Length: 369
Image 1 (cartoon, rainbow, N blue to C red):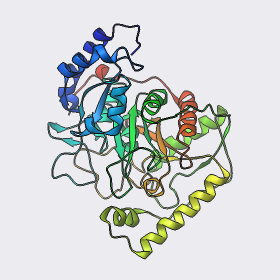
Image 2 (image 1 turned 90 degrees about the vertical axis):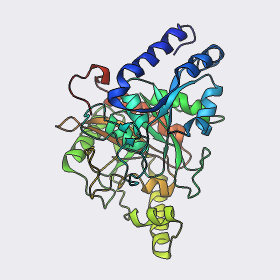
Image 3 (image 1 turned 90 degrees about the horizontal axis):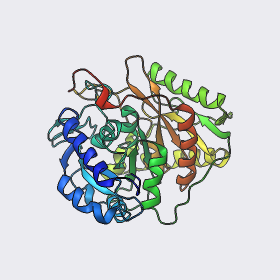
Image 4 (image 1 turned 60 degrees about the horizontal axis):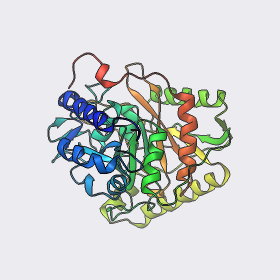
């Protein structure tokens, strides 16, 4: 939202779009039109000039990121849906107003737990929304809703999660919008323009996951396009990790034992060795496509994401394409700890090479929910 534009009219259009589209999408728990319009006069004089954004969940307005965005002139328009009471931690976007639907396939989940944040961005209701990622909660909904998602390096930004697994993140219409977020919330942030081609390693499964063949094929096709465009150059490095599932669960439960601790230490050693040789790791975000609203079944959608919550590396999801049944697939980019600026620079280059025409949710015809 440019400072020179009609920010009042633009914000009213955003609020009108939410009022029109959200009853079917259910991306929001609450919407704050009066508060948003009241904030606008002061916000329009600040760097973000009244940029509308959504916050994750009922407490999102109190988050560090939301406070920094408001201080820079962002205008929060509402709280985005998160899993409702009684749902398992393997979330599928069940908000208290009913299930949040995937803007591309309403019969499928948007992923979670930043479900409403991803759906609102994918639907074009807001350009960015805050999120948090303890096992993939930003990257998975970003992948399944076809938007950009970033998990920052663990500890880079304040997090209330005592386990150390959760890190602040953002869902955005593009990597450039995500960079707007990082410039506001991270003191001293400076963007990085990558020198191409970037040396990269690619793994369809991190050595242990059972990735669906069609999901793997979509991501491999995206990687080939990046190679052809001169964005990445794949070397001979592999990234085979030990399955971190039991370790993640132990850390979350606060009762890690020597076997789980050794898995974590060994994966850290392997990742440190990899990033000493190459700046970028490419994988699918999830081993599966978006499942239905009945739940995830036996598949861990987090299989390819939660290793990097344990290790602390920054990771992003960039839209890679679609399966034959119209489900978005995400390409995961992972960089060395603290290299968030370099990761965003790489994501911008990847996004430029991969981006194709999209269909806003408001223009999709057919049943919803």
